[in-house]
Amino acid sequence: MATYCTPEQVAELLQCDYFSDSTKPTRQTVESIIERKEDYINSVTGHSWKEVTVSNEMHNIDVNYIATLGIPIYLQHRKIKQFDSSKGDKLEVWDGSRYVDYLTEKTEGRNNDFSVNYEEGIIYLRTFYGAPRKDAVRVTYRYGEDSVPGDIADACAKLTAIDLIALDDRSVLLPETGGSNVSYLNKIEQWKQDVKEILQRYKEFRIPSK
Image 1: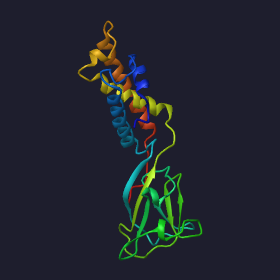
Image 2: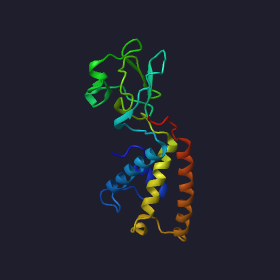
Image 3: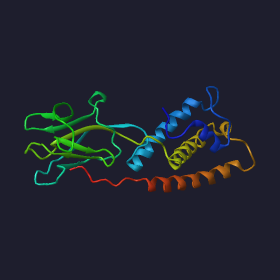
Image 4: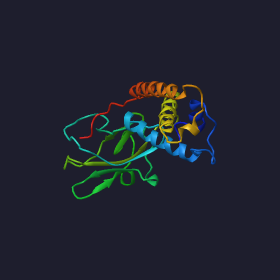
């Protein structure tokens, strides 16, 4: 389901009629392109404005690390959704023979087995097993913002519009005006620059998994 922008926003950007089941391209086709552009935006920025699941993200444990809250595990994303095993989330720690799921076998809390900074994407382990240190933690979690900023919506709409202009049937899609081809070529270059600047501002800088 398209989330970052709507087909109507794309149509307004292109100054064409709204998409429907009978237009060429159809509304469904436009929504499919929007979804692909959402994935592209997530890939470039390292972040998401919709819920995304990360499966089996691996981390090492440095048992020499001493901290009041516990050993920190820095996830590769922030804005983590509240851990919920019923939704497939897992926080697994290797005990030497198996991965122990802390969500079902341990207790969350600052004075308990582990705590989580959901805003920043940091897990703190207070109880853990000494070895092995490599790939000792395996996490499946969900992350993403609850709303889409206006400039991200704008970037998604422009990326979608660029793809639509490249369609073979663009002469049907776009209004016919004098010199429209040149005009749209110029717009594409400006849109690409706009998108580049927007996504650069939202790029995440996270500590690599160890």
